[in-house]
Length: 391
Image (cartoon, rainbow, N blue to C red; front, side, top):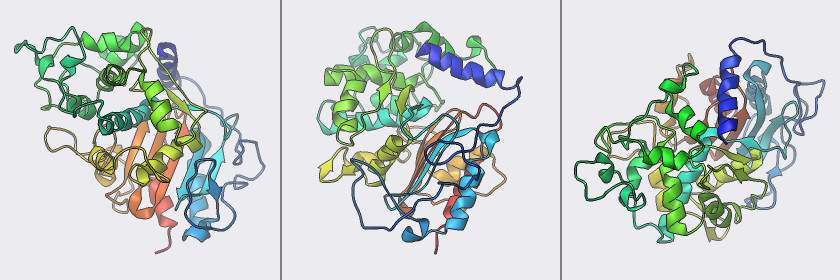
């Protein structure tokens, strides 16, 4: 996994010095077509609610109250070669209404999640809570880390709770500067190269009072890997396969681990676009899948909004990006965020990965990419998709 992460970031740096060769434009199967529109839009009728456990159904945009021409405009925008989109699916009312794959990337191809994995980890914490494996998010992490003394009042790490790892407010020493390729200013690179991600985090010093300082840290969610493994008696990936992926029939999936066998709960999940969409569909339906409750509605609602008990960023929840109109203002798009509903939230990863859920519009959107330069304007794309909805 360390090699994969380092290569991904190295490609980002190298892209500043090389020319980008546009990928072949493609259809929903990833095969090159002469027309950029071929196969992009769903076909068929809307036949009522269902659960996509076996497979997704498709229908025309009009069948769910959307305008094909306007939706096609949004898809064409995401398909611009310079954005390096590799896979895209737009789901309205549970039906695929738009889908496209590019170059060698196809419907059954797995794509690395990067930090979208953090939101899956959040769901696993919720499931563990529902099962009584974890008492609550105010359990102290020192109960799971022998090298942290819960009785040592002089060690700020003794005060860190699960809640703080979920909100990126642990206060542990951490620097994550992606403006340059330099392990001296990027603990994420150093953690990856160490090959022992959990051990690396366990050795960080406590610098700030937990819950009082938000700092985006790829390290904080790694602390939860050991929590889940200790509580469940299996790795976080095994726990996910049994309690999350199996009921959703997500089988073409993998999750990286460190040299000590701990799942990389901050990154490194590998799944297809359609399977990422299943996860979004689960959260759209507040944790229910068919007649089964996968994760409690209480956890879904709690994890996808800010936590008033800590000093945190208003655009973040429990490892989810929340309050989208506010959150996306930080993207510095020239397009205003006014048309984006406030109930929207998303899982996001570097290089253009996103799972976007907008409950009030019954929308789930997944995009995977390798945008090593000049990223797509997500605000513009979402505004185009939302503009396709008939009012």
